[in-house]
Length: 580
Image 1 (cartoon, rainbow, N blue to C red):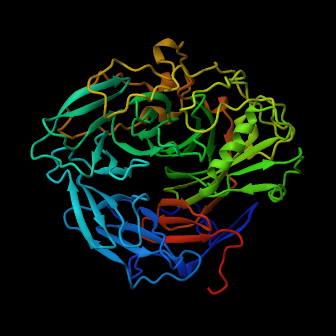
Image 2 (cartoon, rainbow, N blue to C red):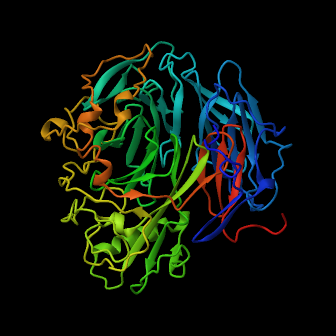
Image 3 (cartoon, rainbow, N blue to C red):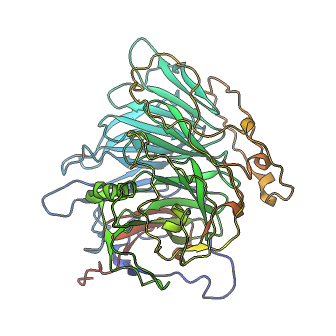
């Protein structure tokens, strides 16, 4: 849907934008779509999604792209910023009848130039395992829809595994599968493994091992997306009930929760070091949540409609190791000392981040870059800076007055947590980079330390046979807090829609306590707008005619896609190849 507002300038599609790193340029010759390049009529269709894999072939051009448009699925060599896209020669193309692809994921562990394993989820609930290089279809899971009849919303390989994968559905259920096992010819019977506040996990009861290995029932309404932490130990889920829930995946225990300002949460992602989670959804906001402190640390407002994708830019997220510097405040000021890292440097960045806990005299400062796209056809880029992450310090260049939420952060966090230890405050520089936060007045909020860091991962999910009781929660329950009634709630708080599952395979009905939005607002689950810093985007540009559904950061470019079926490549500053 086009952005509202009069005038040609408002609805002009941008082909480049400038950040402090330089100019990002749209490469029109690198646009991928259906071969006829005709805009897809997206009415009633599932979102266009994109997956990448590198097959490490000898030519040096190992990137492959997969995308779905309507009933069609395409697999191409991705030439990125190097050469123009040749749409006449897809490696594989599939057209499905009676169902549509909704999501897909490559297994990066097993990918070779001769073979790749691609999982595809469908609108009728099935999951297909295909090899688009060999043009083979090896297996179909939930073929008879005995496990779940609702749309597949997200499918991902379990990190580090060649055979395990996780699937979420619009029913609010998630299922763990093993590609080596069959699904059975009758509806599965389940046995309770673990149950907690608005979630339960069941194992499949059968004489022989069969799929699904586990069934997770999470929250109310559709489970829109999930994401594994960088170390693969934790799982973040976002649902139509507006909750972010973070689980210890191996111990199947709840680590922490967060509630949207209103409406459902639609998308989620982790920072490269696993310390922060960003979620977006129907409140038009991006919300930054601290994994270690289990609390909201910032919100970003730039979109005019629902946020459909959030993603961290691993390559622009930067660590600065230098003498203290004072920045004048212009967008181009602090680039000289930046150290950029890619996939192969994530670990070195974590080690730099962990220097905060040492008494090293050299300051270490970090700026996290993330992006978001939405139904308003806009791309926003955001910087998460020191003054937001560590508000304990006197701020030299910003008027953001944030109360100390956790001034005495324990340094001895469990080693199983994602990322480095809880940041200390001794080695921080007082010279902070320019913030992109809006000034506001803050009110004091209660300190919330996590009571469960999910340290015990000794017992794996496959070894646990029976329920070991209700797990402890990382966040305080509503009954333990003094509820504050706010008379002037946001007018849309009371118009939240819960999508109720129509799936007939709900085995057990949990004791679900309906969470009143008016009671969560102003608590640690959902702080008021004035209680946390409000970020403003570095850039916010209209880049498409239809709603945006994809945002992926690659080393030399970023990739976006809209519901018309056009996949666009934006070259990073200095990465445009002259042969174009």
